[in-house]
Image (tube, rainbow, N blue to C red):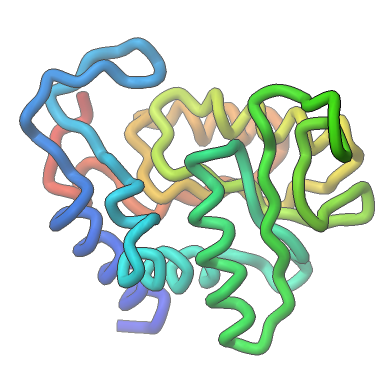
Length: 187
């Protein structure tokens, strides 16, 4: 196995052991109901899980990218873990976050972190069912003049919907795991 396959496999193993729940039903962000749930924060907020996240995601970040992030809160630990993995590898990669709503104090706005109009970024999500969070993040970034190079999700349960939405923006999309990888059904 190459190092990306190893990193992806270790991430999937952690997700299966700690983050997959099959004691549903669960109501998803989309409003849909599912008999399984991926609580990705059980991996992204755990030390060893975050190491696996950072390694697997870093392998998907093109060399010309200088920042990674997405909608708070799902993308936040992924972005930080990946930025740390990049630093450990001798690469300078910043993390950023997109607030759900603009703030009227401090620096204001929705975009937080060392990113701006000259930045080339990858937008992140922990789990995607419809692609709406990634789409919202892309819209905010484009409105700020940021170039979005790629979109990456840890787990895609959208059955192609997210890839279609990213394609509509002209943005390549990568999912690190699908329901089949996790040993659960699509619904």
